[in-house]
Image (cartoon, rainbow, N blue to C red; front, side, top):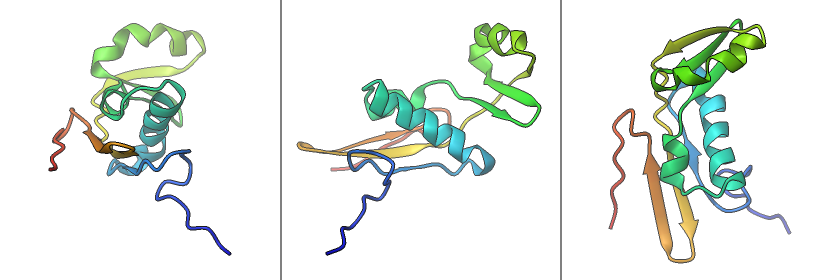
Length: 113
């Protein structure tokens, strides 16, 4: 008998997470999953954490996180402070129902009944 996998099979609990951020998808979804699963943050807090991405030769930091720049700079990375909104959206399926979260740097709205 085959087993149907969760929508996001990387998570131990059913927690569908998506991101329309093109080349930023992997980094932004990984940041959200790590914060939600490993650090037990609620989905909205996990999504709202600052984004930071290393793609190629530039280490991108979100505009309000310039204080973190010395760490990658000391490791030899070129740091660029810029807009890194992701548009991550997530749903946690819990015992009491559904809980949603959305990137506050974009539309940032979650609605439901």
